[in-house]
Length: 98
Image (cartoon, rainbow, N blue to C red; front, side):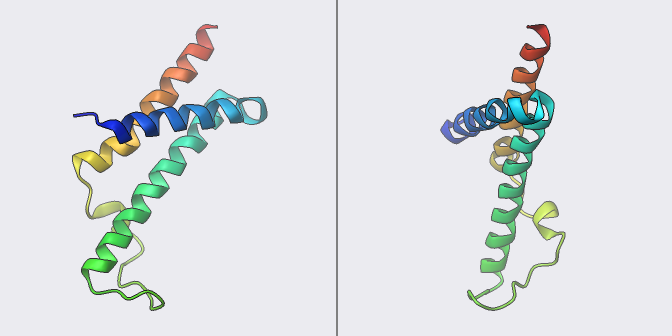
């Protein structure tokens, strides 16, 4: 079920979290990293939906403001957000133990 991109997203999110650790702390760094991947998935869903509705670049997208969060989610796209969140939670939990 977990594929290469999910592992890559988890690794990148952990790297972002650790890079932001000195500035924001582990918790806030993890939240920022997860927000990046959540925003990316929402934008991809909006883009796919706009293309499906015949959108041409340069024109307003025929997508309502909320449709990226409510339309087009698959198990793969959910895991593209859950895997980084789980990795950031593991890093945060390990930081609490140390």
